[in-house]
Length: 166
Image (tube, rainbow, N blue to C red; front, side, top):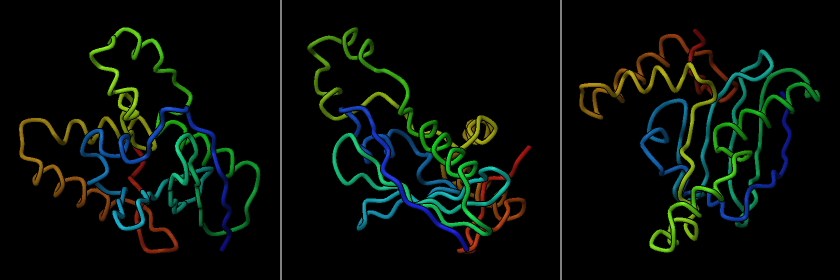
């Protein structure tokens, strides 16, 4: 078993819970929201391995990422995890123009860190989840995604499963 932990710099407006609850993805596998710990768990594939992530935000504008996986840690897997997390939270995108265009009436959005949406670890995951929300109830979407991940997702050390690959 290998693990690493790091703190990533996030934009000054970033608030973890605001992004996590931007829509319902946090409620679908392979995500797990822990309200008491205010953490988002995720099981992802990174550099050919299945990795369990626990993501917290110890302070506004910072994220702590803990990763656990089989094998040995390497710069390759650490970089892959960083890239996945940055993509999931839109950390490299600027929302300044969005806030400016929204104007003073929506100044609350900047204060709350509203704007970015939680994304899956891959575009494929987002596409499948989006299709699964079409013309059905949220409970049916949850059932479809849960079954898909349980049947086809690779298992991590913790027993969680990653979203399947294409």
